[in-house]
Length: 229
Image 1 (cartoon, rainbow, N blue to C red):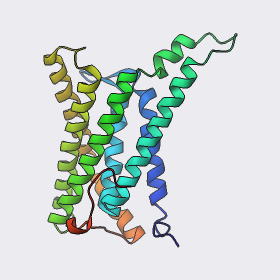
Image 2 (image 1 turned 135 degrees about the horizontal axis):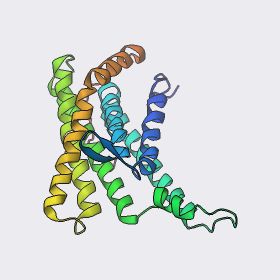
Image 3 (image 1 turned 30 degrees about the horizontal axis):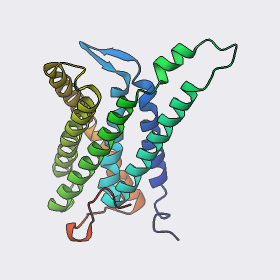
Image 4 (image 1 turned 135 degrees about the vertical axis):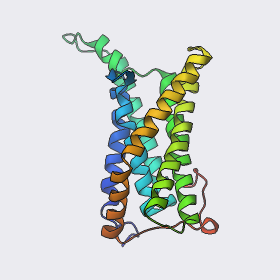
């Protein structure tokens, strides 16, 4: 039996993680009002990817999480390619919604690059910090677990928001507006995930019991390079 076959919930979590990532391009096309804030619709679901990453790293360890981050990256590249292909493909003679399709699912190369780069950097920073903190805390639960979940999210979202805005909008927005947007998105996403901490902690602890695993990555036995698959 393959060593991952004894963890039946792992492919389920992976599926939901990838589903969230594939939904991001289409939901990002609409801006929604949340109280006084106007945000892209994807802001509501993208932090869920970080929650899944927290759960994966907390339960199964950095190395399994790293493989799933790469699966998510490949799914995003594939989705972006399909959206772009269908966008440029000549439409049927009776179909008159090309402009609408392009507005919602059309792929601007710079934004695609920004999204993929931000995802790659943010998710690996998140996973790395959580893994190292769990080792230093000897895998303690309760308040220690909450601290490592919050800290990894805080820094992961900072990197994600900064990379996305700089790669996607540097030179388009004034530097002051760029910085303001980075801080706003970062704090909103971080607050979102902190509010959901009770749920993500309970979920991860339930999975530990159900799967019979609570991985603690020893640094001397863990290759933290994001490029080792």
